[in-house]
Length: 511
Image (cartoon, rainbow, N blue to C red; front, side):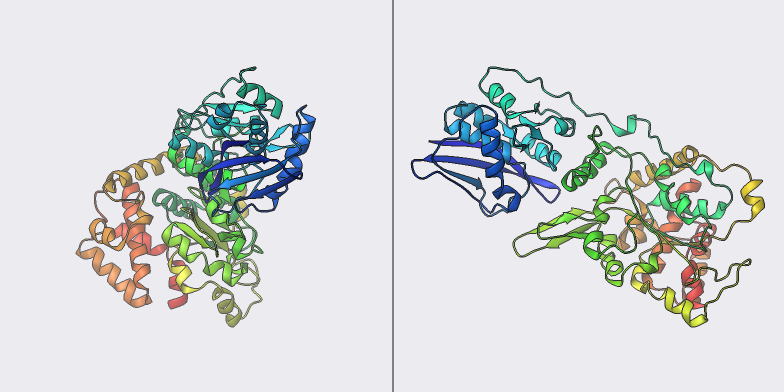
């Protein structure tokens, strides 16, 4: 007897449909799974047989062959347990064949027949919706995640018995309610707010400019000057995530298995802060079956690299491609996958190995050669890809204790949002360009034109400091953002002047 059920498997941040064929034949009792199954899929036979027996059904004493099609795509994870078990019961006439083939199913089975949550449900739900299938049966813990997809019937189940009775028409399962709440309509609550930050007004201004244009930023300052405190508050001034952005980010977290219980949709912009000991695979992604790395987990959010020179050379150099292309392609012998990586890079570093170079209250113990060697750990090509460099000086007691309270994040976010709306209007006819930081050289020439005074100022600075062509473009991008924040229709010399101030390391290395 042959039966067919349907399932799905993530492929990058998307998913493909998988047809699960189960054949029962006369012969020695044997269970074989084919179709490029990896370890967890091969082990499913033990979980499936125990779950069927402990649910009160009989495992037929026959030769059982399970085929997962398409056979040329590697299958991994335990999500095929439920469709395999239902396929065996359908082939043994415990479940109607037509009903078993009519639903897409995902779920890991315990030995008692309970259905456990799995990762990658959202990409599969999107694929099911596109395929026009009847509905999706998922573990109850994954129901909210799948219900985000509008127009899809999602049936949450807790046990194999419940699924069998549902498919047999003996018991109804109420579809999960739609989780499609637009993030922009939900008030975002941030634990960290710029209201807590006193002083450092010029640094907060630089962060506002970076947020308004989606620019990468590097903060340089001694230990305790507030670099990490400032960085953690950047998501609170970024514009709220749109629904499509939330779906994209949630798909990455779903594939990585990092969605928190009870939160089916990522509604706040991610903030990822990996330790400097992270490997290049952990940062970019990879593995035998490629998984998203930190750059993809920061998609549509912030990637914060504290103590930037302490990161491994390979880890820093592999950042260059995702910063430019906004995605990461990981190629293995059998598969090549692309993960999104459209993040805002925020980095922080000390000015020297001891951290006190240029500090008026601490003696620096580093030689000039040691300072240069320390800073040279960040390559010129990577530094060129960071639009804004800003110094974060140490705070004095009076600024900390008697300074006025900082401006709340909500007020800054309002200005940032207005600037972003101007940019969306500016680039409405440009594909995949949503903010000034994403402008190509052609768009820079089109929207970054300056008057004669601004051109003379820019020429003088570029020639005197020996800046690269990429640094020139970065200055124009930042100047365009400053003009947007000011509500100006064109870039003025004062906007260029402020943008030049945000190339601190270029000045220090070339003067």
